[in-house]
Structure formats: C-alpha cells, structure tokens
Length: 256
Ligand code: DGL
Image 1 (cartoon, protein in one colour):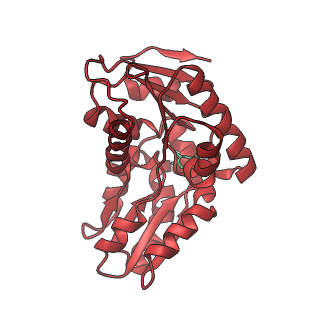
Image 2: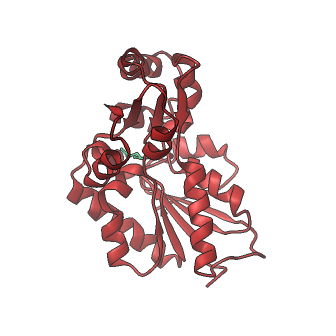
C-alpha cells in the first residue's frame, strides 16, 4: 500500500500549485495528477454536475491504486468533499479558501475573496465564512473568467490585467487588507495580482496548509513511502497545451 501513489485532481492546471507544495513536504511520494480540463470550468456548473464529475475523477484515481486523494480545487471541495468521503474508502484531503487565517490577520476588518461562483455559493464555503467572520466584512468576487484565461495559457498581458483590475479595484476601494485567493488557479497569476494591489494588502492561499494536512493524514494512516522515488505521472482528458507549458515539457502528459 505504502508505495501506491497519492492522487490529485483539478479542473485543469490549478491543482499544480497544490502538487508543488505536496512534493516539497513529501518528496518521496509518487503522485498521479489528473487534469480534468475537458470539464473546466467547474465554477459555472451546478452542484449536482460538480458532484458527478468528482465521483468520476475519484474513481479514475482509485483505479490507478491511489492511497489518498487530494481534491486540489476549492470549487470541488466546497461542493462535494463530504459526498466523496461517504462514497469511497480512501481518505480525501480538500482545499478551501483561507478565510480563517485572513480573519486572524485583518486589521481593517475587511477581507476580499476571489473565487469561482461555485465556491462562493456553496453551503460549505458559507458555513466556514460565517463561522470565522463575525465582526468582519467579507467582500466576494466571482472570478470564473480568470480560470478560463489561465486554462488558455494566459498568465500575463493586457486582457488578464483588465479582468484583474475589474475584480480587484472595488475590493481595494472598500478597504480590504487581506486578499484570499480562493481558487487553486490564482496563485499561478499572483505576480500579476500583486502588481495591482497596494503593498499593504496581504495575499493568502491554501497550498501549504493542504500539503501539511496531506502529510498529517499520510502519517496517521501509516501510508508513508520513505524509499519512494517521488515519481509524477500526469493524465489529461482535454487540451494538454497549458499543462505542458507549465510543466515545461519535463514530464510526459498521458492523454485520456
Ligand atoms: N481550481 C479550481 C478551484 O480551486 C477552479 C475551478 C473551476 O474550474 O472553475 O476552484
């Protein structure tokens, strides 16, 4: 069991930000990454549709003998992680917007959250948000368009900049001092985001926390693979272009 891989999936390249953090804390673990970009973006789909897609992705990774599955997508986690945990025996780790740390850090009492429509309207996100933000204003921005641009391989330039300005300016005006990147795609453009934000605004994302949690679960279940080679295998069911671009053609991407 221990030499079996960790499975990670997302609606495309966003989950690579999670893979990166996981391979830093668990360098010997073998990893299978599934880029489900044929179904991207998840954020504009109904809860039922997201659930169906995630059950399918989890089945795929379980067939590949994954010992643990990381749902490297806020939209998928907030819409169906509980269902996945009920339906499968393998442990699941998910990712949620970093509302709690943002609420500890804020001095202005105003937090911005950049996420997909699917995340922002999910029950789980709203429960977490209400729990941690009693006297804090949460300014939410649906940024589904950003996911589409990133999936097309756009990480900078005029088009991206104008979409970012449209989303960020209202939050800046309202006085946020914490910006939560509530979608795993967004750390891929954090440099562009930081160019627009005043220096006083702190940017938070969840990949390190997910990696720490993944390690804790691996230890709890005695799943550690100390002599593993840290092999990575990438599967993609849609266009492989952006995935290859980010991976810099250092890995073969298996088209499914
Ligand atoms: N990376 C996904 C997330 O964290 C993007 C979802 C989408 O495909 O809309 O929410």
